[in-house]
Image (tube, rainbow, N blue to C red):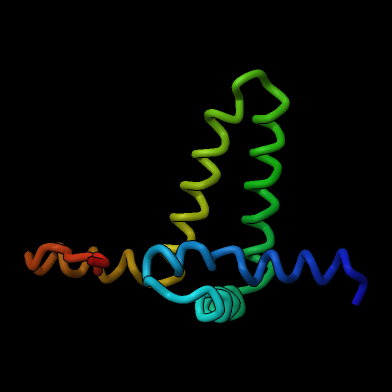
Length: 109
């Protein structure tokens, strides 16, 4: 596999790894594996499409003066939303809120 293709595959596989580190307090190696699993089960090309859309959005924002201040946070929100949907975190939170239990997120410390 040519280097540019392997880099693209790795970037798609590992696109949620930072979210796993922050949200689930995983080590980096575990987070890379969890991110690859979530991308593989949800569809590689769906996640590649999301990464392309966020990349196009950020490059359009960088072409306009101060546009990155709008597009970069929006792109980060798109990625975080995809992570919450694919990891099932949103469903756990919504079901806890419907039961009236409140929602307790695992907080480190």
